[in-house]
Amino acid sequence: MEQHVRLDAQEAALDALLAALDVTVEASGDERVARLEARASGFAQYHRIGHKRQAAYRRLAADREAAHRLYPLVLDALLADDDASSPRWLAQVLVSVGGRRRLQEELAAAVADGDPLRQVCAVGAWRWAEAVDGPLAERFLTARREAAERCTDPWVRVRLAD
Image (tube, rainbow, N blue to C red; front, side, top):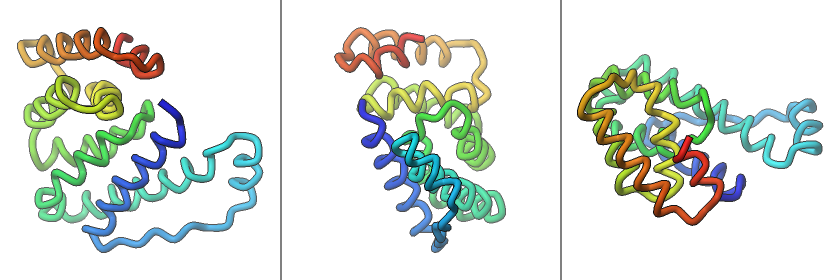
């Protein structure tokens, strides 16, 4: 799966969440970002996404009612974030308003029934859901193995199989 496709999906999910929160994030004209973008295509968008994620997190952490009301949009943003560590912010919000078990159920369902990007993002978010051993963890691992077996995209397959 191409990086620009993943970044576009992540930014679109964050934009929908920010719009629902009525939060605007202004892009700054940072020279360092422009220099890094010249060396690593997609860096400027990745950097912008980080600012959007943090703006959404700050607002959601301060407004529990909004986090509860917008749970589906927060989950969509989480399931579009394939970064290794950044899902912890939105997972933390979801655990605080919906509980660890609910988030684990959502992640297991995304692996079992989601599109490839949602599957990969659910796998990445699993550790941030403070997952414990048990029947739900087994269901998650089984869904992960089955999704990896069905997958034809090498990038996705590697992430599902890890």
